Length: 552
Image (cartoon, rainbow, N blue to C red; front, side):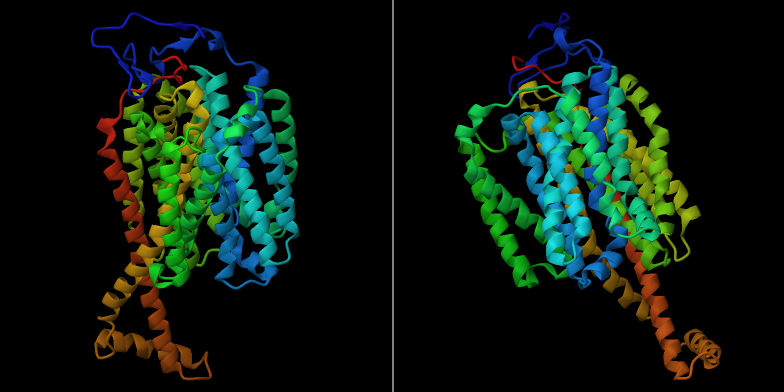
């Protein structure tokens, strides 16, 4: 491969430890004068655009299906005759399979080729979606959702090697804007689309809606994308032991994260066993991948500082996306009593703000230092959390509008620079493996955020309830006046003891206010994480515009 270079200014050097050529000419954003392959410097063809956009549609479906069921779990529970505790497995099964598959996708794309892996995964995802719609028992749904999550986990990372192979500046920034918007919108719009489909048709359409786009995506990608060939020789050294250890490690870890908050963590024997098994498997897994000559996942990618920091910021962004997508709809349901459709109409503001910001984020990425852009995005997200942390029992669309707009803008400012900082610093021949690890950090960030939020909310709800109830003493005149007034009001409405009903009403009000304070605490916790991440920004090196060649 031929590379063009400019004369290095004084002090320029090659970072041999990270196997990445240091920037040869400082410049803002995507205008970096990085070494660019002559053979790939031409603009992408229409066929390339069509193929990548088809892959992006598949990406949208795979990520949206993580959240699309959240606003319809009650209806699915009734359809499957499951208990409230059991129905959570409709989401947990998808997440566990997804987390196991994402890091494995790098090795599989080398074994099968990127095109074969993506098309096979898309067909599997589509077939599993159809099966989910036919499920009549919880056991069937868990199996089908696992297949769906496993297939979806292979689709997401496969997009990035294609993008970095086919696109160069300024087209790289444009396609990254589209991908970032899709990633953020799919997580944000999942509950909205799910609520609309369930209210308008039935919960079965949460899965049926994937069938036609899935067939279309598989066909278009097969005809338009072909960036590599299968490396069949790798089958001789396929690390089956490493695969099993990784599946056990990540599967048990994800199970503990998902189920821990509901079962009081290590006080439950099953959660304790999952943690022990995950810890043991993780130690063996890390030993295996660091000593085996053809590891299932190459963790040495994290020795590249920019890749490690870019993945860390993607982890942080994942906590923000999944955390807010969980907290805001749950607040509107529990405190305000909104329906699925009302929740969707309220939270869609953040997605619309991302769409409006998309054209500007590409220009910013080209003309601004990516580190500065990422820092502004991280800071804006923290500001949005501060604005959101003043929730009251009357907060609704109007009160949440500005915080959600700021959050939508912040996410668009975060995703593009984080992706370019991480993946543009990786050698071309290591990109498939790195893309899998990069996407894993986002999913793990979301899983850890949801588990932490669940635990924090349980503790803070108890704390706020205890503090509030201290002041609710019937001996206080204000409390007694409230109970007397409610008793008189309820006398004409109830045939039973109106005094007991008034006490119950007061307890519900205390519970509601404790919930509001708890949500504010959880939102502030998310904001604090983003502030801490902002402090690490000086460690990031100036990123390259394109991945390095194998020779550099």
